[in-house]
Amino acid sequence: MSNKSRGIKKEWLLKKELERSGYLVIRSSASKTGIDLLAAKNGRVLAFQVQSSEYIYPEKLRELEKYAEAFGAEPLVAVRKNGKWKFSAPEKLKKSGKMFKLE
Image (tube, rainbow, N blue to C red; front, side):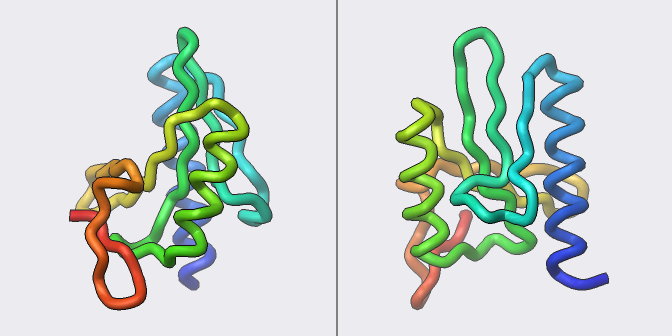
């Protein structure tokens, strides 16, 4: 399975989990925007960038923050490892070479 296929699968998985938790969720097809998922529940709006690994390029992070701000959403990077989701706000990520890493 390609990285792109794995990423799409994880986006759908997170979308379904958020919907089961009562969120209304929109998925951005083919990642043409800075966010993969936009979710809202009881006035709380979340913007997700779903990653296949715990590393993210600075450009993707900037795009996530730009779109989240435009929608009044909380930006979050999401990674699924060993069957569990890890979420991090952009300011909590650690610089690792040219990329940022979820701790």
